[in-house]
Image (cartoon, rainbow, N blue to C red; front, top):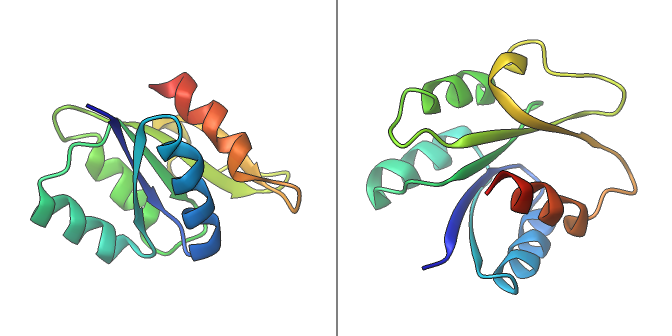
Length: 117
């Protein structure tokens, strides 16, 4: 059974490219463009992702990440932050942080995700 990763990010092209990279490694990506969509997917599909990737620049995503820490099983949270900064709101619960940079590729995320699984 493949591992499940939930990604909350507003860049659909990034999500699709990441999904392809992960599927080749037997890791299933559930993409969500908004926090509202992520909540809906978790509730309706009864998902239990092992890793959740959040774009810390999205409205409400830090609160969402904190709420996930109360779920069982508790997923590991990876945050995408602006280049040269960190997320002050949810820094304490992040298992990994990756800077969003122009040269960032989905392949970079594959390594992060595999390390968290």
